[in-house]
Amino acid sequence: MKLGLVIDLDTCVGCHACVVSCKQWNTSGTLGALTDYDPYGKEPNGVAFNRVRSYEVDEYPNNKTVNMPMSCMHCETAECVTVCPTGASFKREEDGIVLVDQDKCMGCNLCSWACPYGARELDQASGTMKKCTLCVDRIYDMELSEAERQPACVLTCPTRARHFGDFDDPDSNVSVLVRERNGLQSMPELGYNPVNHYLPPRPKPNAPIHDGGQLEPLTDRFKKWLNKVVVR
Image (cartoon, rainbow, N blue to C red; front, side, top):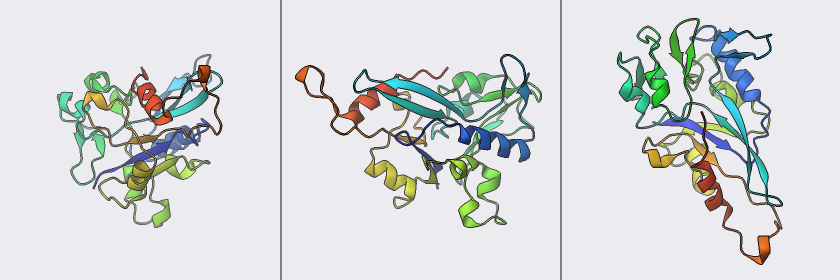
């Protein structure tokens, strides 16, 4: 089993509902409170596992705002696990979820520096590293109905842009979406093989052509852009 997310960048509107629900669930769940730093100050900040970054893709008249949620990719070859000196960062064999053992973590930041996706957050209050767990305490809670056993971000998304499932199952919803919509990984050239995939935006109908030439297929153009995104 290989659990992960598919995020549809064509339908994500950047509303941050996934950010809020992630914060709420993980503050009340097994990880304890996620610290906020000066929440009512001039520059509020704090620990969050899911952040939405917005980019302008292409140029007018073919431009499009793409809202790109970023969280842990649960990479198959997770460099954050490799560099951890205490074994606090580990990848579960049974489902591929990457987690951090809070009792072993010493907050050295090595895993954060190794992660190219900026997915890890050092909680200054606890002195330990925290990150997306795919709501592991929720997806295996048999007291919940099957429909509710999904990550909080997936359940709350108002546009259904987020999907959760088993990538090892070729007939799962996430596998079908990736196959039918040419789902892409972020920065695959690094060799970490992230489990999470993004579905590229669909082309605009009757999009104008620059200088009478032919537009490069949108998937190819988006792939080039996705590999250039700087998340830090």
